[in-house]
Length: 127
Image (cartoon, rainbow, N blue to C red; front, top):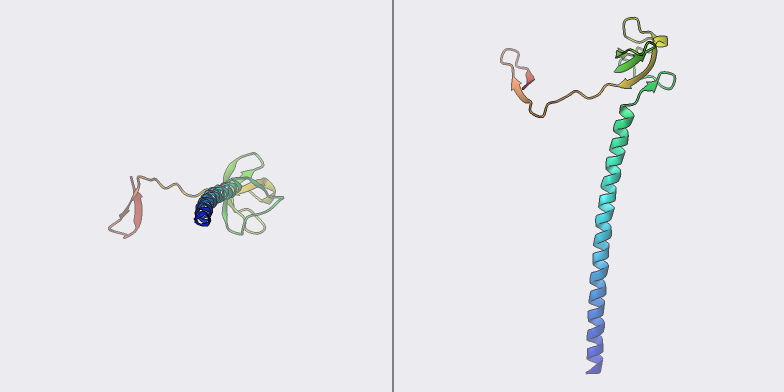
């Protein structure tokens, strides 16, 4: 009988230890998922910030014919395009442009609904 009692206690202790280990593993997996989501969000935020930074023309130029925001020598900000040897903006040549950055995404209202224009059959937003 003594042997059975000892085995029962040991079995109960093992079950409790297993449950404790499973709980710890679940806790660590949850924390790992939270950490991974946080890292993913931080990476996305970093990418977004990079897209919103001015890039000096001495560092890098945009893709050819890509519309970008440009800062001119007089600190005017306008939209221009790089054509491979010249900026596509009236009176704004390569030496006149200090820096550029990608255009932001277009604004889309959350209350806007898509409607179809009967004559042209095109879709536009309506408020």
